[in-house]
Image 1 (cartoon, chains in turn red, purple, green):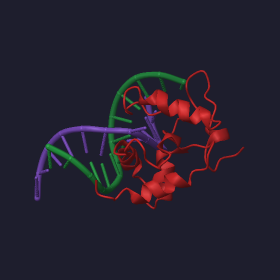
Image 2 (tube, protein in one colour):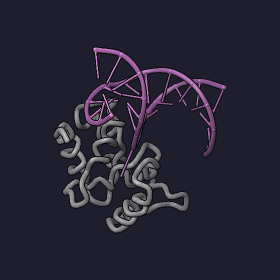
Image 3 (cartoon, rainbow, N blue to C red):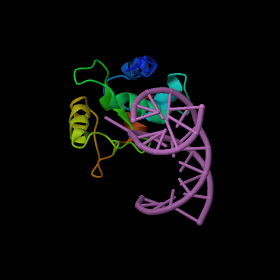
Length: 104
DNA sequence: AAACTGACTAATA
DNA sequence: CTATTAGCCAGTT
């Protein structure tokens, strides 16, 4: 751990409950456009009892990232649903509705 | 230091 | 809508 992800975590923590943000969005808001991958990389190194709502971070399609921890996808989905985020039949989130900083 | 890897994105077909 | 390609840049090996 380098602590270089502090910036990313800070932005992720800023995501309001019941909303989701994309990796690219987090990268941009953290002052690092184009570092979408790095954002995901940061999430990967998060401990279990972290204060960072990593579950609110999804890919550009509004889906749970596939490269996430196998099975961890379900956990993320449960957590989001618990916050009020609805998934459609395809397992995707309507970014236009739950996307952070999107239209309602 | 060089090569490899990766919770991604956007563009094109 | 899906599939493929290229670009991105920092962390690991």
